[in-house]
Image (cartoon, rainbow, N blue to C red; front, side, top):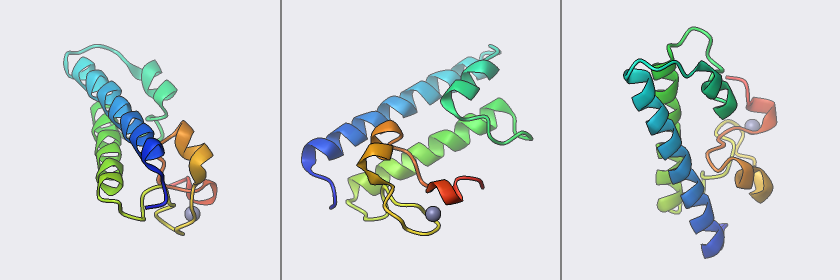
Length: 107
Ligand SMILES: [Zn+2]
């Protein structure tokens, strides 16, 4: 485990908060509310062809997958899933759910 316990707990809380925000937004979409602007703010609008609920479900899956890695003490947490580079505590502090380095950010 590369993170000390306070850091791990902070990252975990950050992931759970993100999941809650996304789930709330998903509920809003399913209730027929218009939320496009909020998707952009959350950085969830990177796939032009997808419907808002699909974007949100995918983002939720990604957050959940990262939380599972963190909880399992899996060394892949906090690393780029393409090249394995450590994303660093600073970047993870901003986006605990990050799964790509800058070079591989575009899917
Ligand atoms: Zn990479």
